[in-house]
Length: 318
Image (cartoon, rainbow, N blue to C red; front, side, top):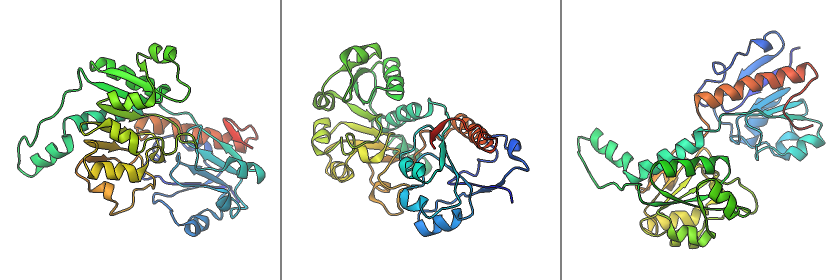
């Protein structure tokens, strides 16, 4: 019997077309799931006969309790080289191999900047107005001459700082270990976190989720951002305290938010963030590009071939 490979969460039905899977022809059975399997029992049933599972970033959690119910599973492949939804320690304990892939790094920063423009120029309301037969419903705001605060000045944050310069904005930056020298090298001014929120017209989040960053943006930070301030989050939902954000949006504490990430994903039907007029909500599109998917699935195939040949590559655990 050939090893069975299950690809999870292929929302757009593009996994098969995003790479050449022919190196696996005759070596595995391939099964691709397009719907998100949120219920643990349904997920376990779908993966019961899987020798290999391919997980798209952090769409489906694979904690210790799920892995323990999958005795046949031998290889986990995640797109990207980090996936907080996979319990690597539990995988090691069960002698499961976990491998990752590369990706294209431009998409998330580009999306963050697009969301900022959409907020400043009220693009969702204006395009909806045109569709309804209306014309010029409000006044937009120019970015030039304004200040953007960047939480996290890694690869994506540095990319956003470059966009800020191109648009004539002054960039402030903060993270726990950022130095003034590193900020200056990226074209940003290092400030303390409270000053960043106080001085910024918009704040964009580009940090990884950890115990230190969970709830990093809360009531005090949003109040400092103020009634003309925008918040953009394309990183991870829980970095921003959702209850505090909802209160700030409903009460006019900030002008608006553009969110690509949420505490629960997919965002539940009927969630208030789907309906607030000062929110732009996108369905975690940061890495969802043709270029990223081409890298992801090409290297997924290579990871599986490496495992089959006894020469695993890009090993994260095992």
